[in-house]
Amino acid sequence: MNGTGQGLARHRESPLRQRAQLAAWLIGLGFAATTLAATHGQVTDLNGAPLAQAMVTLTKSAQAAGATATTVFTGAKGEFSFAPSAPPGTLQVRLLNFRQIGGPLPATPGALTLLMRPDANQAGTAPASAYLKDMKDPAHREALVMTCVACHQLPAPEVRAYAKLLDDTPSTQSAQAREQAWTAIVKQMNYVSNVEFGRAGNLVPAGDNVYSGGAPGPTAKLLTEALKGPLQEVRGYSYGAPLIVTPRTTIREFEVAPPNAIREAVPFNGTDYLYAADVSANRLIRIDTRSGALKDYPIPGKELWAPHTLVPGTDGIWVSPFFPGALLRFDPRAEQWKLWHLNQPGGPPVGLHDMSFDADHELVSDHHGRVWFSDIVNNAVGWLDPATGKSGEYKIPPVPGRIGGEQVYGLAMSPDRTHVWYCQLGIGSFGSFNTETLKFETHVEFASPTAGPRRMSMSEDGVLYLGLYGAGQVAAFDTKAGHMVGIYDLPDRASAPYATFWDPLRKVVWIPTSNADVIYRFDPRTHRIGVLPLPREGAFLRMVHVDRGSGALVTSYANIVEHVRGPRMALLIDLGDDAEVHR
Image (cartoon, rainbow, N blue to C red; front, side, top):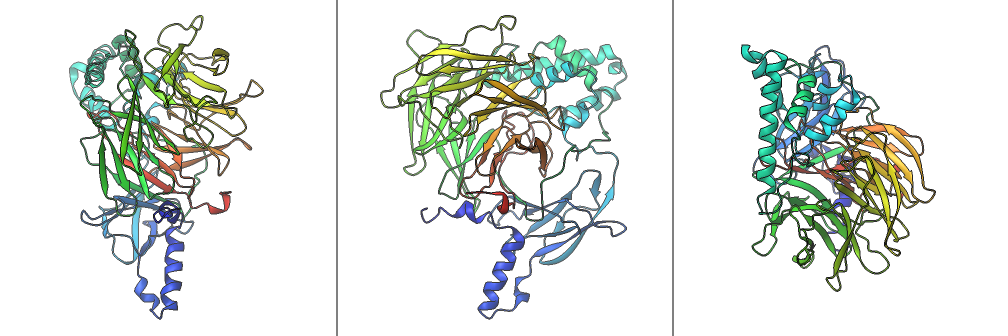
């Protein structure tokens, strides 16, 4: 590694270990241990009973360096501790079924006690998905998640505020009147979608596009069915599986000030930096995980591309744009951009979405040096030869009975570097394409056309893992044997699992969710699921990556449309599980 290459590795050290190691070092130099006062303490209820696995968040003062906020978890005795190097700021605590008494407390050195009281009303602490848990028809839930949870959570706080307004207004209390009111909202969502996708003067999506509110009438009926009453209370929600956090788990959040639309964040191997894509502008944002400092890297030229999907490679970070027509690569070492135009003369715009990557989620080419991609606009798989600039694509054959709205989305390459696998979000199917014979081969359909396979990943053994956005499941398919290993229910079927990420260090699958404020861990050996809760409401996730040097998870709150409210941050998560990481 280079001089800065151990930065993310340093994040593996938990606050308790950092404190102990620093204490030993300073005592060895003759300093008194009392000079090591750090913010620590206990979280209890009013009777003094300790509260375990509570999230204690230190939000730094405005002028302090480092992460915007750092979250640790309490142990069995309710104890928590931050590193001695933690900045000044304020403390808040978050725990399902409890609320903090009083406002934020100053994060002063020394022991503190944070008090919480039980609260059966989980509004504000339970995720948006909790409000959908009682939907009786799974098909209706799937359709609602697929239609509405593409840019924002449902029901987000502003949606719940609208429901209360309807409930407080005499003329909109009947089911028919509420349906008309929700119809107006769906039309507004389609208008926002058209404005967003029309910014660059390219194609504007139709009502059945993945980033729209869908057909106003049917969607309004689903909203009226699901969102009953003022939505100011929700009760009885549970994570449904064990939490995988310990007192060594640390979540660092790095805020990128609005206006922005942070889509994804990735690490770059051998550095202390994260790179975030901003689809509201032509820029990548570099985040220094030591100081919290930000640096913009605008894409040269007058065209609006808007960075969208990020895939690290050995030669830089490969970028697909929000708007059709190009593939880009940013070299963090030289701090330079390279752009390949993909549109063919007289042909339709190429809507590149995902790129071919391997089990390490690093960009990979086929045996001819071609990078493969999914074209969401034309329902095709395409290729680019970066050496020559030549490109082309192959239309995916129609699926009988599921024609229309196919929307090819995720893409991954098999270990043989001969087959690329793709999924079609809009019709619940996936398949493979042979890059040598240039023929489509395997085709698989899920039982439900609204199952919603979105982003996927591939293990070294050739097992493909797909997150089913609408169905709230994860599927495992053995690409070598050609059979489905299994389809597994997630604890929260309304969680909207956006992607899967095969973790080559731990041999598990990470599943970021868009509607549940959690990341799931799926162990293929035991089929057990663990839950990693996130410290704030509106934690709309899309992708997650694993830093290969440290084992830390990297993700972002991806509320991508500027109109959408919610946190806009990149996250670095030290799981504190060194014993489980095999290098």
